[in-house]
Length: 470
Image (cartoon, rainbow, N blue to C red; front, side):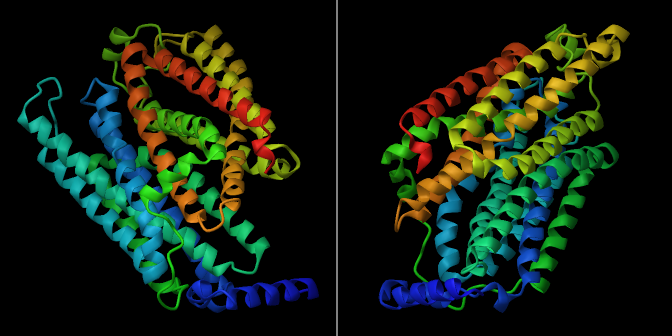
């Protein structure tokens, strides 16, 4: 440790000692040296396993329901109920983990995940071939059971995320460099888990069908063993809550910087929710029903489960790669500049996907000339996705900067972040599903244009008022 760092640490310690209300918080956190770097790595790997398990469950459920329900809206709303329990629980769980310790909540998450997976398997066994064309009591019961299971699965994430982030905060105190590295790793495994789980879940569904929920159970059991064996508690005893409740988080909407940034952040989360939730369902909708419903749309129906999930998984990996590249240049750029470039990438992606959608009736009817055009169009599509991926790290940086200006209320800001994330995913899946029901894949692209314009207006307002320079 340098002399400057030693002096700074002594000053901070002295200031905390002079503030009685912070004494318990200071005593409660253990450094990375005390818990060990292996424990921090285990926490990150635990997050990765949880993300892979929950998204694998989502993919299996998506195919199970999507094969029997013509309405993408119904399927999307049921699946995205996951975010209701997450956005309600996340702010409060952070506060409780401050008082009771992080590890009990880290342990609770995979237990809830196991319960949800077993619940889904039972539903599939009770209703192996649901008749969606006949709306009766059995169908209502099935949808309600799946809805309850998704709420339970969302609770697992709602319990895990604030405790995991709190664990990172505890164990990286005094080391800004380590905190940056670990926080970046947390974001990478979150996106990477999604990217890995989509093709993985597709293959599990292909080979095992709904019995694939046993694979989800195995992932949660592995995660539980990892937490028990390798993660040490990062707090000693009761501490003052640093995370706000849901109500306190919502009060932060009155902050002008948050209020003006909200449309952009909400729109992007809604866009991500719509694409990730709906694209596999839209691509894998069975033919000939897909061609009869929306003829002349290549990206609506006709794809196998494996190919649909591989395509979305490729999108996730490309998005992850783009985020990694943006991290290298983001500190040198104005945040709204990065966001505007990201929205430009969204525009390119929408235009290219719209052109690709009109190349053929279905994957089996692509002519040689259309195949050549498809290959050519993939180049600007890759560029658009890489540019779009810059919006997320820029937006996260903006949220962190706003939180830094709210002394004593940073927990409320982070709670609001979780709430907006959940609401965005819910709105994107439900409204995006309605757009798909109305216009197929073209409907999804029109919905994406609307969200992009809302985000653009918000970013331009922030830039004009220099809110991104805080």
